[in-house]
Image (tube, rainbow, N blue to C red):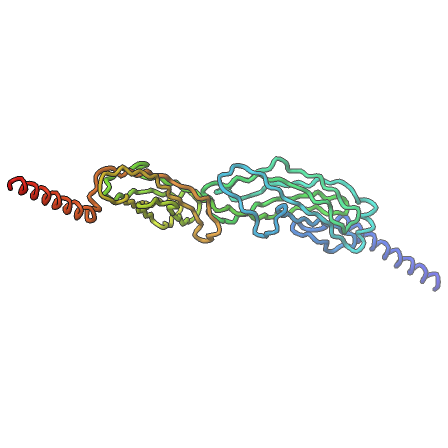
Length: 334
């Protein structure tokens, strides 16, 4: 009876040992985690990768704003990596995997192709596994080259889809996941401003109106503000305060000039500088540089304006001369 119980106990013990061995083999050889999982799930000794990607030195979660028409420019991404583990994974990791090198493959899967282009010169990075399983790996730097076209709407949000893959390495599971990195097309303040003429000749008693065509070549609804910084004494000059233009829209504003008035001959010339500043209509803190268009106005000729002051003097002189002449003539007769 005792011998039989000992045999049964040995059988049970062997079965339990075999079961533990089979479960361990299943956990090692079986799937560790799906491509979209970053935390260790199931398995006592399972270890998985966790990856995070962000713009270098960029705290804004909505991404960087990239100015259109700047050509292909480099922008740096920071790739952060760490490991997650099951309860018994740490001991095995420290013995077999600590400090090992592994290839991290980075592939640009997609981006807003209708208004941008994204490229990269390298797609494989050397990842050094940390000495301790729960310590983060050294951050990796990855450079992408982005070009934003002029048809990108202002502050249009887009995403760069990066596929990151790390091969399976023993008990460390394979990592294969697409990570989206946000970015924006910045506001492009771009105008074409042309005066109908660069020089205008008028008479001193006239008023002239000079058309100025304004074309919005930028990527957002733009308020164009106008100003004349200097107006010489005696001149009068007015320009349209502002216009609001959709992309590719053209409007005409007017510069109205009246030369100095005054009796007599005039030869007055002045070059007016009309300043204009493009401002995004949605957020007026976003604006372009102030530029200017110059127009020379010449006032030449005789003006009778001001004769209301001079005419009485002339009449008085005529009367005085006539009286002198009259008395002289009368005196001679006598």
